[in-house]
Amino acid sequence: MVRVHRDEDEATFVGLVTLLPGPDRKRQLKSYLYRLIYHNPVPNSVGCVSTWEVEGGRLVYQVSLEMQENGRLRWHCSCADAIYRGEEENRPCKHVIGLLKVCAEMPAWSGQEVRRGA
Ligand SMILES: [Zn+2]
Image 1 (spheres, rainbow, N blue to C red):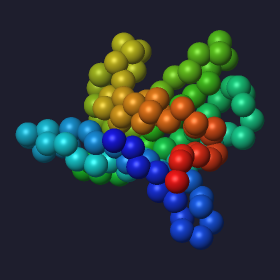
Image 2 (image 1 turned 120 degrees about the horizontal axis):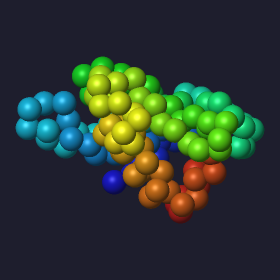
Image 3 (image 1 turned 90 degrees about the horizontal axis):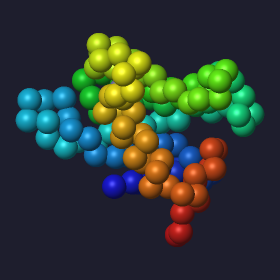
């Protein structure tokens, strides 16, 4: 379930929507919006690759992708789940999993712009 938001006039890439278990007790599926707020224009440079703002949960969270000096990519999320679980265990929180899923469903992802058939 991927929807690409575009600004009507400028066709700017704004964000992505995906369905994730919501914050309520039933974990009912809710739509979460990922908004790209930062993207490093230099490919393969060490540091922050991209930062996303996630709306739809109790709070707005920030998910960011970091390129480490050893060339490995690492995800960070500002939610409590990610902090308590420890990102070291390689068990990303649902926000990261959701974003990975959305990106995987978009083979034409080119960083700044997403092209999809009309
Ligand atoms: Zn999270």
